[in-house]
Image 1 (tube, rainbow, N blue to C red):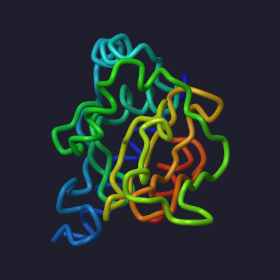
Image 2 (spheres, helix red, strand yellow):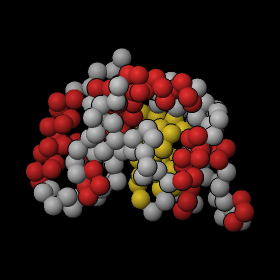
Image 3 (tube, one colour):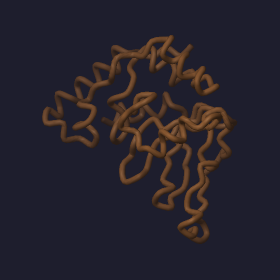
Image 4 (cartoon, one colour):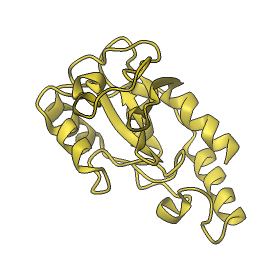
Length: 183
């Protein structure tokens, strides 16, 4: 079990809110420098059961101990089943076996290199199986938590929509705390 210091995280977010009373920082208009209430163990288990996965410990413990959706890198963190998720992401998450199928990459992957792909081949769900969209960067780019496969527990930057590919960013704990220290 990963122990998060929820009090320290909420204090840092409160300091960010005090420094940005107009919520003008990137994403603050949506999350207002706050996290949603923690998710119950039964709520997490229900999600895991429906998708045939167990969430990585760092993320799972964050949901239980610190918060569920809200303040986070760029436009913030999505809840596990968030109405703000784009339709195609909801379809991916709800496709039987999508999250349980191992994520196929362990290093940067860009199908558009060396040549851009033709429009009919510019995206394939198979490139991102085993990943859960947890945050929005903006301009069609997202943060994906890998929930199945060798990269499990890592957060990857998904810039496939702009031909930037998929890039690893370390584990969820480091990714979130690095953002928090900079905000």
